Length: 356
Image 1 (cartoon, rainbow, N blue to C red):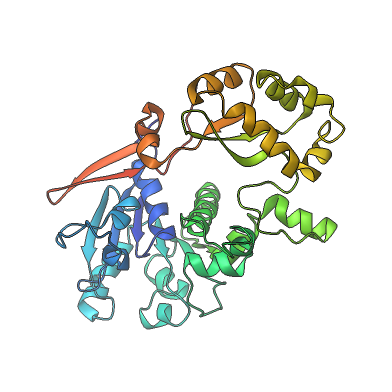
Image 2 (tube, helix red, strand yellow; image 1 turned 90 degrees about the horizontal axis):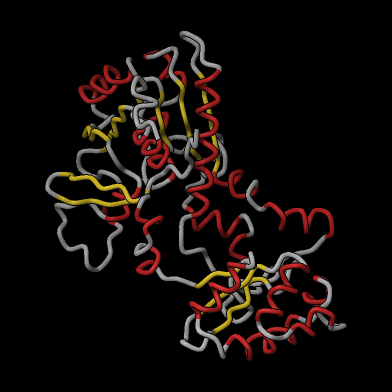
């Protein structure tokens, strides 16, 4: 990967929390000069979002470090004339500005598009909002998980609505903004500024994918079924091996199912009247799971995975992060940086590779 791809790009990041800063880190990883402007007293709120073990308040929080990498930090209070003057001077040479201030705050801080283009007419502005640029409602990832249907679908009947353990809506919005900014760079013209805006709400709705189409085409309102898939079985059921490891399957075709039951020494299930098609397996998944578990419980995790993977059956061991980051492929995505004597780590914002 060419880490100097955007070496001539200059970005000012006045966004906070996760979505906006992760976009800045994406460009920083590819060589852009990114200057993150923070309030001299309050800073970024994520520095207060700490684990119980993060006791050194002079160090950045792990949450903050996750999306702030290779950035120059500039402490400015944009409400002060002297600091706003320095901000304006810094902005004049910028290519992109990232922000996520809600309506009203952008006016108070003089960071509306017309304010910014008066300083730098060719500036590309990347803006993230909660519910749209004209909506002043405050929003965090959890609020959008609730408002967009994700929480209603997630969890089980017993658990009730459940949020996802990663700020996924923020991440999805960040990807949308990256794509918009890359297109803006492609169509860029001298002294002609552009505004690329993404709302967390739109990013969330656009990511409902097959669940949205299930509703829009069939009127199906997804129910909380844990890790199960409403259209495929076995898919998401949790099984336990002889050595007490947890595994799961994504059996998306009859071919996969035939291979699975054959390796489990239960080939007769492939032609069973209850299981011979995917629709039947979905209907009768409560009968299928204990049958599969009986055989799986007699095999070790490693031997079962090896046999299934060799036959191209979609299977996975359910791993915690300690196991995940003991894998070389995951370790290759870890980025480290020394910041004021602190050894920080995060995962890369870049998962793509140019193979040729």
